[in-house]
Image 1 (cartoon, one colour):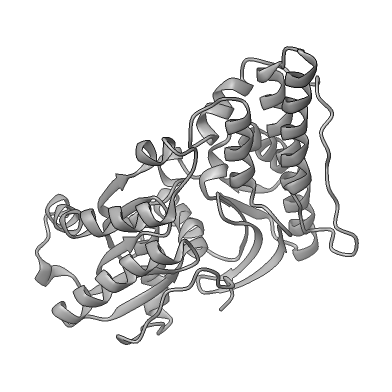
Image 2 (cartoon, one colour):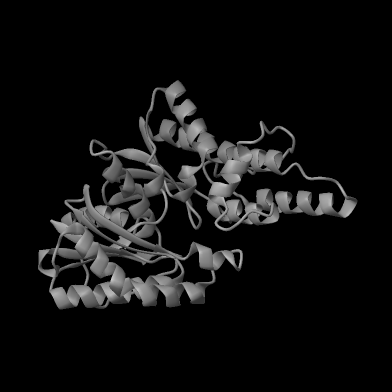
Length: 335
């Protein structure tokens, strides 16, 4: 079964052709990162307009790269939530028109479910049940993946997502947008241990997280150094910041695995590309005797292939919709 999949939840337009949920035939991506870097972050209206400009040509490219014609497509999958509402609407609207024109089923896919499904593309042997740590620019979740379409949130951030905090901290340190990779590179230049940053806990919800205080602490450190004329150890701060994020994420993921009895953990999302978090996860899982799946860096960020992968399993579960499909800025992964 060949699925033409669309992803446009933020600042990447992506179209892919995926066969049977596990084989990527093509994965075309048009990034807007350089444009939004001028503003230090994503400008929603600009993102939406750029999606409109490129999505049609990108769909044609995905078909060419896959060696497919339109008649070879058996279904269309699309990210319908969550994300920047204007950006998501572009993908949903275009996908609906394609499904209608080709007279094939339309499959709605939750963006975070797609990130988790990226692991299926990299690791054909991976099957539910397992625990997923989904960490990206807009979402930070600990998810019990009971089956391909049966998921429960065990823990989540109460405020900012981990990826958003990386971008804000990077901006304070004078690094370009998006901040994840530059922060990681800078952090490798120091052993850290210089700055004592907050580690938040949510009373009564030990698997939940909070990152707003950590972000504020970095801003305050930078401003204080500037005001008193002190030189900020940028590399040490980047390292200590990444370690604080990891110290928030990894122990909670391990505790969630202990509570649920899961012995398999998969990471997902753009922040899963961070080398410090990956290293800490590897050590923790090795010590606990758990099997860990870390997606390759190319599958951590937004892409169409992950939507096609999850779309296949949504289709098998009977989750298809009509032309009344809408886009949503927020949506629970379990819905």
